[in-house]
Image (cartoon, rainbow, N blue to C red):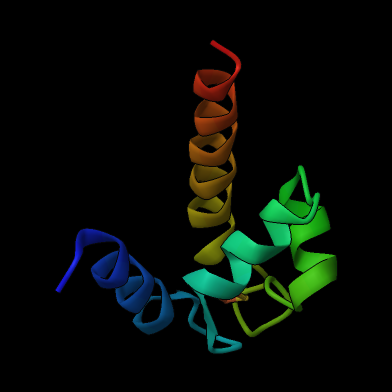
Length: 77
Ligand code: FES
């Protein structure tokens, strides 16, 4: 299995928002189409609206935003 396929599979299987059952693939797609803050990701995907009110998924979404931002910064070089 290629690394990219493996990463895609892991994104699909990894729940970022456990309360709402939203996987990492959905969060990454929201970021890819323009969400720049946790609130924007929450609005686009419904994450953060579960029983914990985003206490569990908020930091994970923030990390994915920072990771995406870092990836974009690297592409600028
Ligand atoms: S894990 Fe996302 S709202 Fe609880």
